[in-house]
Length: 331
Image 1 (cartoon, one colour):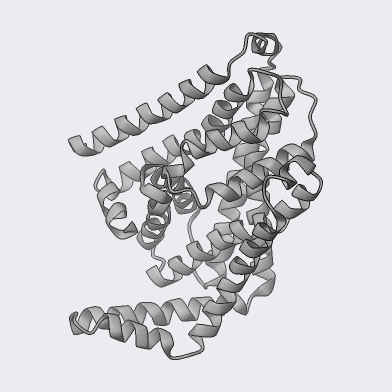
Image 2 (tube, rainbow, N blue to C red):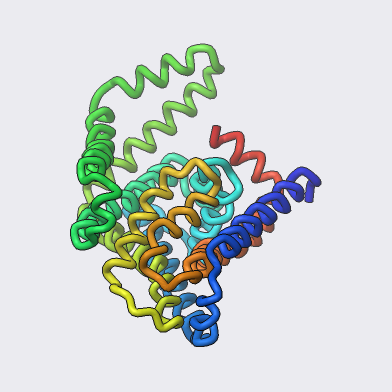
């Protein structure tokens, strides 16, 4: 492994450890020991079970969207695509590498780049749209959060993300995309310009195919929602293991709100922002001194376990050079 890559991984590890230690150190209270002594080990298995089910629904969503485009993705490649996203999202600024890594794995499996781009784009939009739809409902039953995030902000974001795919489809019915491609490729080789137009042609075809299969798109959307719900159910699983008295709807609502915020986080994998957001959202819902421990447990279960699995798969497949490739394409 190149020394530069090794240094980056070590730096990331130290950064994560520093955040985790800092979160626990500045929030720990002697009263937390009482709850830790009552901690039920089976809740770890419950949390891991929620994570596993969530990843399975994520994989099913990928399979469904790939089928819509007329392609098939073998089960092993589906696992690689899903887990590679966790790895590259955490080691690249703004999580840009996650999408690139997924496309690279799908290309290696024989899926055209244009079609895989559509699949990954729709997959991401579905997650954000699901959160935008359900978060206002949870905010409506959680009066404390309602005061933090004005409803007009949620409505504005909802309208923007709802309009984006509609605007994209409208533009593809015009000549503007071809003109933009022609303008941007005037000073490149004829072969590269031809490849750009071919990519757009395949991308346009795959997008229109999506619109012709509303039933399967709805199925993928539901799988997207269930994936997010189960992955974030790891938190109430730990609450149960610590014998906390909590409102399930309130906890899940705040976790989904936090997840929506993390989609726009500039830090790799939302590191730092995720932990800080968890402390703000849950410090008044859990007993004193336990919120930091729970934040670290959540991140380790829902983020770092898939990250390490994705690291093994991705580095074994593409080698350490993928870090420089994804960084370059993500810019």
